[in-house]
Image 1 (cartoon, rainbow, N blue to C red):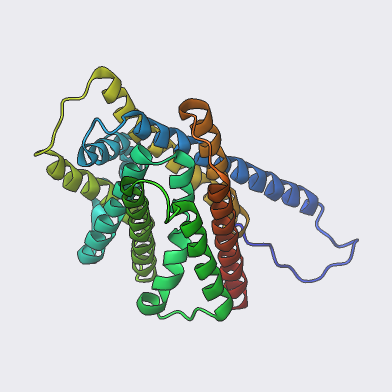
Image 2 (cartoon, helix red, strand yellow; image 1 turned 60 degrees about the vertical axis):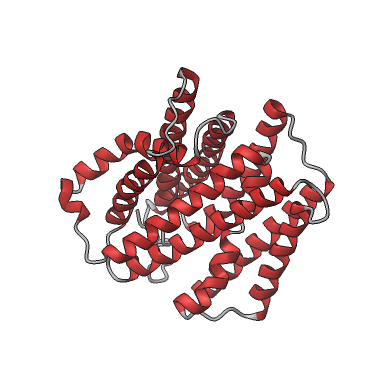
Length: 317
């Protein structure tokens, strides 16, 4: 869907097309639906995170990742069918897909390890360091220039991480979990850069999605064989729920960005911090302290500033 404004020659009031108001109304309604889709996706991703946390580390990490990818595949089969079946997997960039798969698996591993160890809201907030890593990596990998203001925002964001991590407090296991989540965010940043480079080279979006989904299932499946644990009925439900709910959230997120501009929708993804804070408090009695709230505020502010600068620079270019 083309969400760019319709550009027409200046017309007087009498010459204005009679359906211009109706077109504007339809665009406004589409944008509102897009916002609701993104808000819903952020909330549903929270449910998937809760399913992983409910496993309480009783299932090996590789097996959790495998089941998440396995149970998400049925939602992708219609996508495969609509784009010509296996022909949609044809690619000239197998090496780039391999890098994107490895980076995406690192992202999943970091997030899932964090969900089992840290408060949900903390993991979600730390996950929003991805734009910070993306900004830093865009310099050597995409040859982009980062000005002093964006650089200061990145530095402020990592200061927010230090506030949340409590360097002088807490068990070593919590610090390791924080590091794992940050490594996962780094993985997602690398994945995003790889996706951007493949997109610039002409690779279809559906090919990128399908390659990652199937390759991630195969790789994580092989990795889970040596550590496989027979899940209970409850654990099977949580594993299946993680995959199915994640797929639904991804569909809603994609539909939202199809209907509305990224410049409008990106800030609403930060609502996930609110959902995870509420769910963590209600189910696991996870109440962030003052340091956590301060770190989240700094991290969100820096992320939103970077997003705003990216939009401004993109429009100027």
